[in-house]
Length: 140
Image (cartoon, rainbow, N blue to C red; front, side, top):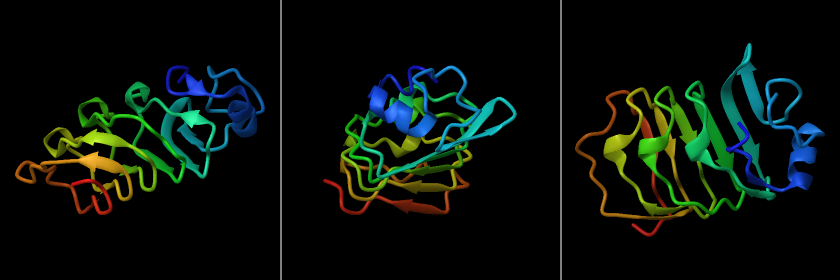
């Protein structure tokens, strides 16, 4: 998880973990939910201490919820964990052309509302499990 938190300030790390050691996030970290030693969920709201590197998420992550955190990074759906069933990146500054054809195949919810994502968008090869997608208030 060290790479995921790479651009988070020391102040931010101390706020969520009371430490800057990112090797043991399954014990006492706010916003991180684990099953044993496997990170299952990441949830941050109104956390403005740098950008998370979602390209460095462990494959065990099933829920990624980062909203209102002023995140500014280019979204690559190809690099999302294949086990992901929910991604909620609303109200950030996430940018780039969103490729819906490379979303994880088990994904059920994909909320990207209020970002800086661009199109065009191909809706022809969405995951069969997808039940909710929100791309409103982007540059599409």
